[in-house]
Image (cartoon, rainbow, N blue to C red; front, top):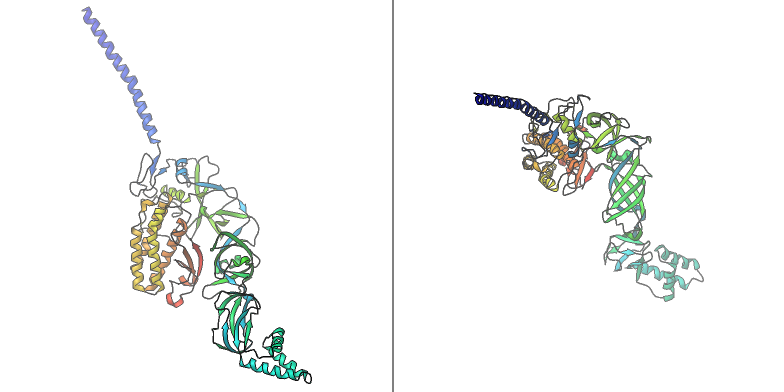
Length: 585
């Protein structure tokens, strides 16, 4: 009985111990699990800016489009403005967001101009013959030949000159009695531009000279040869055009929009395509007071010494003028990469200066003139505010995901749930900023630009059926672009831009006349120009050209592979109406 009682006590002790152990350690396990679960909820959730329905626990690529995932902020900005968008340091690093402090500077606008080397019109001469007759021999036989003043250009046989020599010999015989008749005979030869030396030589030889040389009146380069061997010429007839190119003109094309920024006396720095890695400097000496009615440009002239004749007429040049605004006071200037615009409004993202975290809020600004790589800000920013100058598109995408005010949704609202392929209302001019893409991505865009240029050429030719076919081919090329080659903010931008393009092209293929097609072509051109200026140069130079009369006199742009103006909005009716605004190469 005693042993049985001992066993019962031992079993009871064991059960009590197990129960206490379960209560103690089980509770700890539950606490640990709860803490782990709590920690798990604080982990960063990763999403796709174009497919916000994607939620991942770690960074990577979107399974739908292949673009890099971005962190989804779990912070609702309880301690800040509910309209701000907060980005984690990891998201900032992935989006390459950079900021800078707003400051004032003296505004300097860069005006870029294209032009050509031209001969100095003051140094262009017409070499004429002062003797009528027949060309017996030419010593200068081709254009481009360099000649010196006094050089023999040709020999001429002149019956009139032979008769004048006979009169001279007869007058010489009676010069003692009638010196005035002798002097008159010599003066007649002088009127034919014979020199005193030539006249004295004729008298000393005592024989009639049948061929007389034509001497160059000036030194220079033969730019035009107007005679051939055996030609009969009249007194005063032009034989050669001669230009002295020791001094040349540089004639720059100044477009209407840039005329207010170009003034006589402005310093110009320019380069010549044929002389790479070398710069020249000059000063605007004259601005054409009349605009060319065909090219819509005025000429600005720079006179420069042509040492060694290195600058040859019709060489292409590119120049830059740094023009100060009339108001020389310091103003707020920001980089173009900081500004996003849709044609109707311009915005920047301002960092919250009082927050120790990266909070940004969209701010609508009023732009002044474009100053090359920067904008003058009239309203909307203050000195010492901090703004995003790089990665602005990623900030805007994050704002859209969070339902905060953004470029596409200024009032805020629910995040987009996927790609916009044209089902929702579009803006005609989308956001522009500088975004780098890979060579492979640019290669994907090349067929789209090629199809666009063919589309444009058919409109130039007034060929409606071919233009419709061109729009269809462009739409087909657009669909074949591999969107996975566009990474980060480039992918965000491409998906929005391609959606706008696709919708315009779908409308284009349903048009019934060339007038409606040209109206839609303006939208397509705007989108293509935004693509070009955002992603940078393609594999060939492309010219942004402008017609001020198109679009009901509001003006319209288009792209061309040539600087020649061929207007797609009017075709043959006003083929040459327009100007080159910019070349991207």
